[in-house]
Image (cartoon, rainbow over all chains, first blue to last red; front, side):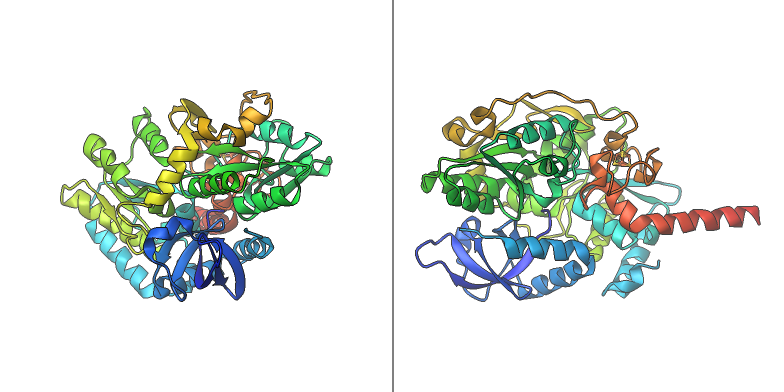
Length: 90
Length: 379
Ligand code: SF4
C-alpha cells in the first residue's frame, strides 16, 4: 500500500477527466489523476501512482530509478503488481 | 557491507558514507529517527546501518500505518464484516493484522466476505456491481492514502452510490512526531522526514519541529543514496548550528504539498478529538473521521460498533519499537513466537514494519556480526 509505482500516461478518459490510462511495467491500467488536475498532464508524462491515484508528477529519469529500486524488492513488488492487475478503477 | 555492493550507486554511497564519517564530531553520538516505514525498509534491505559510522544511530519511527492500528479497531472491522449483507474491503496489508478476535484471514476462513483491493476505487466498483450488498472500505494510512479515500467518497457521492461506506482509520504524521518530541524518553538529534506523506502535506507543517523543538528535519527519498544524503544534510545542519526543514526529495515533493489532496481531505473528513495508536496510546487530534457532510458514507455511523478497547498482548513490545526506544531484535518474542507468519505485534505484519523489515533482511547479518564479535573477543 505504501509503495508508489511509476506509470507513463497513455491516454485520458474521454467522458471522465479524472480518469486516465497508464502503463506500469507493461501493465495498462486505469487510474485516477484528479489529484494532479493542476499539473497540465499530457500523454508521455510520468506519474507516481499510489493506490490507484497519481500522487506526483515525476521525470522519466526518476521513474526509471524508482522502477529499478522496486524490482529489487522482488516478491513485494510482484504482489503489488498483481494487486494492480486485478484492480478495476472506474 | 555485503548489501551495499548490490545497488547501482555503490561508489556514491561509499563517498557519502565517508563524508558522513568526516562530519561527525569525535566522541559525539548522533541519533536520527526515520519516521517512515518505507525508509526503515530501505535501511535494512541495503544494510545501511553497517555503512554508517558508529557515531550515527538510526531509530525507527511510528510511520508504518498498519503497525499503529490498535487491536480494537481490527475487531470492529471484523464485526462489520460479519454482517450477512456486507462485503468488507481493505488493502492486502491488513490481511494478517491480529485483532483481539483474530485477523481478517481468520474471519474470511469463517465465512465473512472480505476482499483485498489495490485501491479504494476498486471497493467503489464492487459497490456499484453489488447494489444489494453493503460494501465497506477499511481505510488505513497516513496522508499518503487519505486523499485517495477522500476522492473516492467524493466520487461515490457524485455517482449517487448509496451502499458504500468507509471505516476510517487514517492517521496523521505531525501529531505522532509531536507525541515523540514530547515524550519523556525523547533523545533524538533530528528526523529523516517521510517522502510521500510530504508530497501531500508539503514541508511547511514540519516547521515547528525546527522552531519550537530546535531539531532539524530533512524530507528524504527512498533510495539508499537519498537516505545517506539526508543523514549528511542533518549532520551539516548540526555542524553549522542550523536548524531547518530541508527537502532532499524535491524531485517528488513540492514544498507546498498538493492543494487538491488537502482540500479533498478537508471536505470529506474531520479531525478526531483523539485516537488510540498502537503502542503510543491516545494522541489528541491525530486521526481523521468522516465529516458530518459525508455522514452517509461513514461506517461508524452506518453500523453499530462494539468499540471495545483491547490491550496489546503481554509479550508485545511494539510500542517501544515504534517510539525508537527498542530495536526489533531486542523484543523478547522477536523471531521466536513473533514471525511474519504468526505475528504477535503489528510491526511484524507489514513489510514496512520495523520488525518485519529486520526479520526479512537484517537478521542474518546481525547474527553473523554478533557471532564474529563473540569469536573475536574470545580469541
Ligand atoms: S517482535 Fe513482534 S511483538 Fe515484538 S515488537 Fe516486533 S512485532 Fe511487536
